[in-house]
Amino acid sequence: MPKTETFDKHYEQYEKWFMLNKNVYLSEIKAIQDFIPRHKKGMEVGMGSGLFAIPLSIEDGIEPSEKMRVIAKNRGLNVIDGIAENLPYSSNSYDFALIVTTICFVDEIKKSFLEVKRVLKFGGKFIVGFVDKDSSLGKNYLKNKEDSLFYKDATFYSTNTVLNLLKECGFKNPVIRQTVFGKLNEINKVQSFKDGYGEGSFVVISIEK
Image (tube, rainbow, N blue to C red; front, side, top):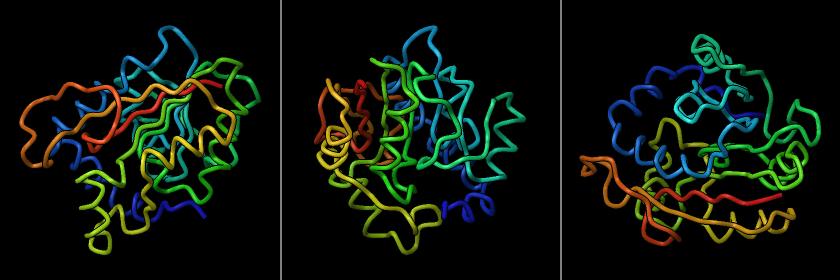
């Protein structure tokens, strides 16, 4: 079952978090941006309210939370009901796919990755953004998981685990970068990203079908 109840109930708090942590949010956008192929057809898995799709110029996506879908539709996005493990799209139909933090909430991560592979064209790019379980922020989220509104039901993954799962699914040629250095409440400007992982709390992997 998709973990939508919290997002349906607390969609306002979800939006508010990104406004309160605007520099973190914009740092994440910056790290993802260059991986998005220009003038290509893309979709987002777990579009939420469209906070990543809009600045990254992605029009299509799936979102199981009804409240989030309504907001995204009102923002002009072509979002439909669906889950990562069973994408409602034809095979070989997209040039790229994006998933940001949603891997924490899927029931079957490997099945989700295989579904993305199915809908991507040959040579298509899969861009995966997530909080690294082994980072300072990841460890903090894990420690306070039971008290967290949005991460109570989340499963966190290390970069190595995500990378290995992607390779098991047949993806190849990964490029990895990281951002969000330091504590969230101390990030007072938009940060640049660095190649690799192990320092930043937010990791982005771009990998090829």
